[in-house]
Image (cartoon, rainbow, N blue to C red; front, side, top):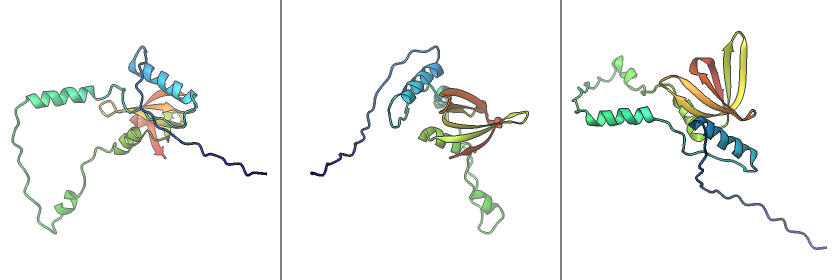
Length: 159
């Protein structure tokens, strides 16, 4: 009897553009995510198409039209002073981990406190984060639904 050879399946990556109609950008995105989750695809990543940052773009355009104002640069701190340790601290708004999860499209577990003793543990992907309103939009991978939560409702992010 001859030994049979098995051929290992190969994986391929394709870049596609999709045109989807919906009552809003979020509704169209929900249709795409639902269709992708129902398909036999191994994995997917949505790289663009979400209308984000319009306010940021407007403010940058406004800033470009304004005249530059010189800024005073503080003098360097002498070594060994108490202020030296504070100069080593990086500037951060504290939302870097949220942006990292959103950009990588990584599956995480969100722990949400809805109040009155109600806690939710949601396996999800972060779709959007609005740092102006402190609202996080997530896609619940089990329920295949999009939800929004205020940042003060979120207790933890777990990988």
